[in-house]
Image 1 (cartoon, helix red, strand yellow):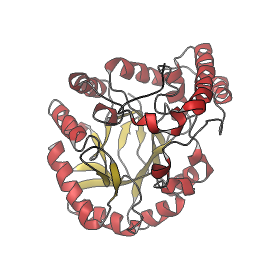
Image 2: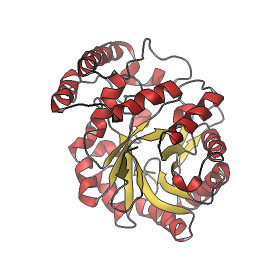
Image 3: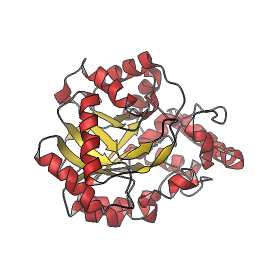
Image 4: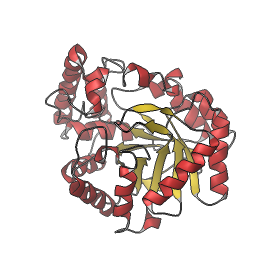
Length: 330
């Protein structure tokens, strides 16, 4: 497994990380046994970075990972945990809470659910509009001093917030959506992170499955994509045309669309670590194949021509969730 440094202050991690959200939440029902088998297969393949959030399945995802961890060496793995998302009993999102007192409480519950004595990278899932980022990062820094957290990360915040956070404590990485169809970080945020020595852990590299080559119908039911603008009506029709163009370019390069999309993100810099949200072993194997793909500059140019910057139709999230993205401010 290839490795990359998680920022100038962070640990070495695998060149691909495993995003575990879909094993518990957001994409409809998941198979528990297959989820555990997929985590096992990822670790056995050399993936060391496991990403979760305490609100994924309202704690379910952390407990699932905690169960899987018992079969592996904890010290070989890097656990990345987001916190702050508030959920109702029916799963609805209620907002964010990143007050210092809530930050420390959330950490305590995550440690218990994961059944570990420390978390490697702890990060607020969004910017709490009611709490200065300095207060949130300061609270996590106290937990670093106490030994409960090793490193501090950020998620979906803009350049100003990144600078303010980094002035309080070193930041290892920014977790943010980045793909052929979501390239907003190239307009300032990526440059800020590079200036400060902060890595990017990129989620949504397949644009929530839109360009993964496996989508055959519009999402429905409890799949959150059913409410996302990119997956609705005319937007979906336009975006599937982009996906088909990418499929053609990928096949010409000898890879699958998913491998093309993952490899493109990985090619954007040694400081970028794609997170793949595989829920099944076959999808994991496909994703891992992106690391072995022999692609040249011409192939990557063809992928970009198939899905040009700014061509995607519709926002990443529904309007209320878009309003919570400090990263959209640049």
